[in-house]
Length: 270
Image (cartoon, rainbow, N blue to C red; front, side, top):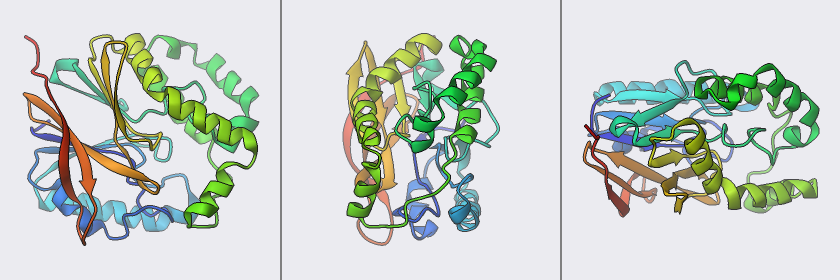
């Protein structure tokens, strides 16, 4: 993997409420770095209403990266579980773990209507993959199968924020699960690393759309947010010596790396 590495998450290309309407606007974010890791939910593999446009945008993104001479790593998310590979990336000799985040909770997206209605099927899936309790590769396999099991049957019709908020609280238990997961996701990431990647000092993730930086259980947890309202998107860079993080500046016709909000020295240990 060529350095420096840039990490972006949750582009949701082609989705009705993705803020990325023109893939060309992403060129400054993929230019000038050795590798870009797209950390899951890059495109809408499972969503039929968005899939055709999303697939076209994905091919355009690949072409832009190729034109810029940038290597690309696509990690799987719950919206695009079909990517090959392990489903995570390690930097700084394992001190930094990058993974989407849908493997942090036993049912992937606990706030989804499908998760609320299919608990018995979720339990049966876990019974068939008991090795996932200790094996990270098997845990990612399970997360990918969970994404297929919990594939949304329908999608919100409205694009406005109030319409999406109204959808989120129906049924009311959805709102409770959203709040629970939003407030515990950083702890869940630290616990996940402790169980599967004990050498990881940093976990970089997405999935929950809540951007932030936390220190939990002796680990640094970074959520890169999403390119969906109301949540801003963050970027993270690793150059072999330092990890940097900041907000994506989406003002104007192109997205750029905005002000740096955090810097950490993380060299690979001998």
